[in-house]
Image 1 (cartoon, protein in one colour):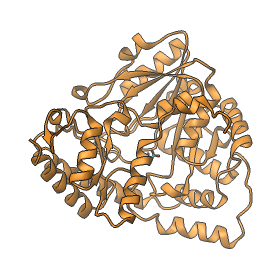
Image 2 (spheres, rainbow, N blue to C red):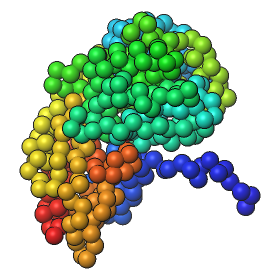
Image 3 (cartoon, rainbow, N blue to C red):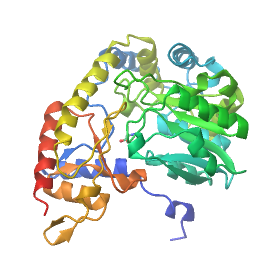
Image 4 (tube, rainbow, N blue to C red):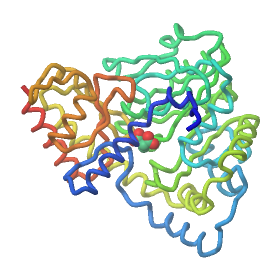
Amino acid sequence: MPSLSKKIDRIEESQTIAITSLARKLRAEGKDIISLSAGEPDFPTPENVKLAAINAIQNDFTKYTQNEGTPELREAVAEKFRNDNHLNVKAANILISSGGKHSIFNALQTICNPDDEVIIPAPYWVSFPEMVKLVDAVPVILPTKEERGFTFTAEDMKPLLSRKTKAIIVNSPSNPTGSVLDEETLRGIAQLANDNDFFIISDEIYEKIIYDGHKHFSVGSIPEAQDKVITTGGVSKAYSMTGWRIGFMAANEEIINRAAKIQSQVTSNPSSISQAAALEAVRGTQSEIEKMRLAFQRRRDMIIEKLVKIDGLTVTNPGGAFYFFPSVKSLFGRKYDGQTLKNSIDVTHYLLAEARVALVPGAAFGSDEHIRISYAYSEKELTEAIDRIASAISRLR
Ligand code: GLU
């Protein structure tokens, strides 16, 4: 076989996807595995949204659409960004793509030149550094501390700035930590971006899933930073539409036109049927969002009570999204079957084998002392899973 791309040798496979697939395979083989690995709401897609998709099929809305997304959906998303996020945008500032991941990748492709540096606060979502590498730029990791709720400020970023700094990726609420950046912090980052001329890619996919009086603030709403911010989001998490693959980007028109050029050569428009569904999600009743948010909050509150009782885990209460990111450092050195747990991968392997619960090791998110537990699952599954985890941990010596 001729040689293959060397770049791909330097890219990690997405662990969120890999572990979710492994759990699915084990279950298909008849194994009793509970998977808390994927960040995927367990609720069905709302009825009105499903109906819009069925109508789209029946009305033969099954051909290519405009490359950038349908004019109706672009306008509806612009309206959503104006109303919910206070962005100063119109349809021409919106690009519809095949999922939030696609939107972030398009953004990076649009702004990065080889060797540009992109600052990524850690713990980070698994795909950020790999996407940066895929566009030949360099991820520069900004570690954050659990004691500070995994947040950071513009001041923390300063030592990492260089002539090559092209962007920072902020993700609030965060996957995997659930941390939320407040308005003051985001204003500081925007000021720094203006002073030093770099972009802010603001991944706001979890904006609707936020608790305890935290308020989502969109950095793109700051008028002075408007041209520096690329805001990305999508319908996957808020409307339980992960499989439909609709994401969007809001940015200045030049960025949108360039990102659309990339899209025109690589994927063309996202699915016409999914766009019809997304239009209903964004324009139709928003009542399901609050129901789901409250359910996530109930689950979070239920699980934290159990997690704090497990000897060996230290956990912070997430302010948003639907993940716990407990520290498992105290488990390192504990033994089972003559083996010693040394890192987050050992811990997740042990819990898969002994508790039959699939989780993602923190190493995949840039923190080898943690594991990620998604609570976008039913209360029954969550209760059973946490009991199994507690029991498996208690068997360690
Ligand atoms: N974003 C979700 C997660 O972190 C879905 C999987 C993925 O796309 O990475 O689990």
